[in-house]
Length: 438
Figure (cartoon, one colour):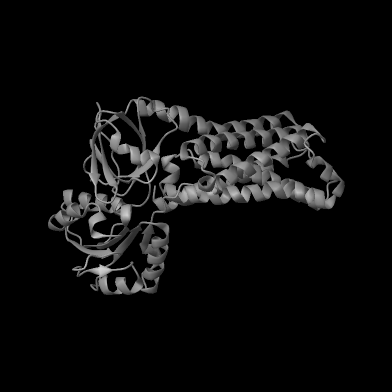
């Protein structure tokens, strides 16, 4: 299916899933004599709960669902819509209390009914989930513990919300409505079961092992994996996988890494990694032969998705990793389309993979512009940051249609995207990957 049609189909299905429970609950018999604000607040509550429930589908990494957009877009939407779901859920009791101030007494967890207590518990769990996600780093909560608490709080918030709706009962006043509501909740949570139990079982049959951990410049390294007893993994250049290391694929400790190797090499996979956190800093100590399990490939950041007469690649720091995959794949395919690479980093001594890039200028139709923030005294190239002025000097002038790929620190990507727009590059030809998962 065409990816644009597929994207439209999944959006339509998403809207149906989100709104269907609200409309089903309004099928007669329904509570009589309700005024507009009561009905409106309850509708907001239903939509908020279903939005919250559908988040379990969004994070389950179904490749058919994520393929039209890229999983980084899905995860950004997950964060934003979770906030909206929280607002809708809180608006439900807030409207009721504004309309009938006596209902404020239900905020007392030791008063009211079990329905109101479960409603409060759901809001509390969702609020804590959001606080821990937004302030994870200031609170000193490491990534693995955050993931566990995030999943548990999400399940708790959904279970408590379903208990609240079931006990309130005014829109679940028939056996078939009760059954539909329970099936809906179970279907959403089953996505977490799929992600944490079914997928790892499949990964066990597609095992890899660490073939090499190679030090690179600038506190970077290359992790190389080899397939064990299977032909390996087909992927598009620029995609990524979640990597688990160790004896079991059921570990919660997994991390996303972009391929730096050619897509034409399926049995040996390489990943360019910046040593930023505890896990990545310890990768250099992982013994050769360690088992590895992969979830993927994921991502829509790929030259294979947007054929063009040529490409402009703009990378900052470790954002060079997917660009390496692009260039190595083009070299293996003997692809002679012109490519301009603008590669920015702090200093020449810390610029990772530059020997490989220089070698690729011989194997592909590649032009490279290096940009150094802190150049040596004898440096003759570009300095500072990637700006509109620098790009105006560097971008090719020939009249062919090129696609633009940008990867690097978020601030850099924002600046580069604005600069390209200033230079009249259409937005639809600018592709970025924003890999901030939290």
